[in-house]
Image 1 (cartoon, rainbow, N blue to C red):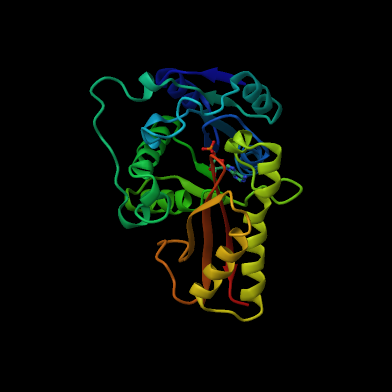
Image 2: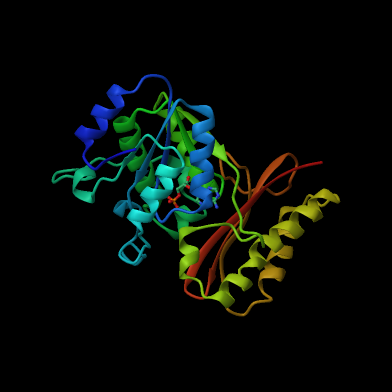
Length: 279
Ligand code: AMP
């Protein structure tokens, strides 16, 4: 496995590869969720590239950029074991040299939910993903459904800018109790980890209710809110029942719906979601 931190070296390796290339962009501190994307990429492509870059432009000034967890050596050994061909680990100066000025605005899909709570976040994501696509030039890129709005943003971006990359969305990987894996789970105390299971539980109850015929989005949101309110330490940012592609809020679950939520558990903000379909 080759490890490169300059764009010039990444381009050289890319040029030397034949066949299809799968790409998994990450911010590091890897867990089974990331590795599931790498495995899928290995199944579907001849070679796999992974980037590890904690992208400063997707963090607001009051967010956790400086304390975002990092474990580069461990990440590299996991990626080597997983059969990755090359890893791109640029620093911020390589990606954003002096004079850098362009940013990508993907419009309405980036505005609600995470976009409303984290202004500029998706512009940072769309811009860095476009740069990474231009540098790595993958055949397919693999993203996790865990970040459902990010998936919608990337799909919009790739379609609107005619980027010749197939976007593959992979299922959420959870721990044995149902908590969606996230690098930020490392901020949780043991007790918070346990209590955070309510997020997935509330989504499961919503899914059951829909399976037994409930259609009203407001009723579903109220059900989830009631479950989450059992923990006085939770602070709910949003509970959403939306179209999975446009992220427009739905009044009624008539076809496919993305039920997503963001909750602060103590000081840690967690996301979870579930895709539901009318039976
Ligand atoms: P991050 O390092 O948090 O930027 O995540 C890199 C990629 O891994 C993104 O496409 C995430 O959606 C995906 N990912 C993170 N956590 C999970 C998970 N629990 N299951 C599946 N994919 C995940």
